Length: 347
Ligand code: CP3
Image (cartoon, rainbow, N blue to C red; front, side, top):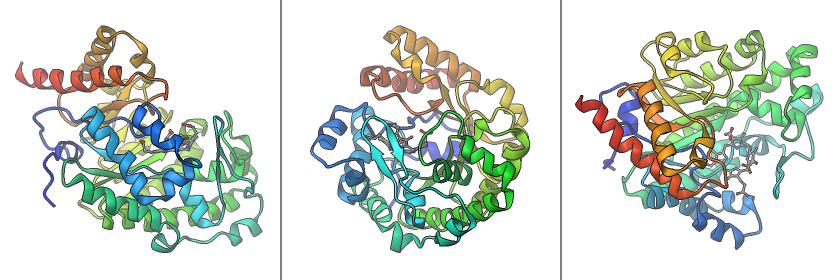
């Protein structure tokens, strides 16, 4: 299947593009009325994630509604711990919950390295259905959580500001942490490779809790496993690593065998560029900028684009779009990227 729009793949590979590609983290979700309407008919989040035809439908909604340059498969990073044997619940208005957590070597021993077709077949089927329905309109992004971020949920059991149970394990029982990270990494490598076979054109690794680690722990317990994952991917599939809050880890980023580094809104791309070689950068508008007036959104977007420069940039927010954002402001953001990035190439 030939892609009609491969801007994001070319930008990720570091090739020249005629304008800057744009998509939004969490673009498939509650900002769209068509998502909320479908979601209201279902028993919950997991039904949506586990029904390939429905997951495909909400994956494509933002392509129709927002005209973004990529689709990201509708799923969650927490399907991986579930495939390994630790079931999650998505509690309405509160977030993820693991009724059982990992506390001991026996708990780690009980977990399996998941087989993608057997334990995550519903995601792979969603990718196949989406791929067919997209008919080459835009590339499809597959994803997984970084092993450290997955460990954090498996040990803590739910979201947390500090994830102190998870960080405590790194200090008190580093060998246990490594044993768990090993199983998560092996599962993730097989899972992401299977996503590519099912139709993913590029991949993103979300390390949402990178920023709470000290630099040494980040290097040892997170970046090293992400590097292994990147190295195990097919050479022609660009990988983006988004490690939120890891402004102390630019040297680790530079050495990762991935093409693109995602930046959150605390980072200045002008400072990061010279530190990461020829990698492409993704990001990084503050999601709160989208609460402004259309003129304010336009101005903030233009300022962001100028900081990244015209090439080797994939425009995005610095984290997922907040659920109460007005889709019209999202459209202003997207249109401004498209128009202004053309202008940047003319003068
Ligand atoms: O559009 C997309 O980006 C694709 C879908 C996607 C979801 N989760 C759907 C979702 C992606 C890429 C994720 C990744 C994810 N999930 C991350 C990494 C990115 C990040 O935000 O840092 C994390 C940490 C999770 C875990 C998770 N899932 C949390 C903490 C929550 C609750 C918070 C929230 O946003 O409600 C979820 C639930 C979730 N995942 C929702 C969606 C659309 C909302 C639930 C709903 O619709 O009922």
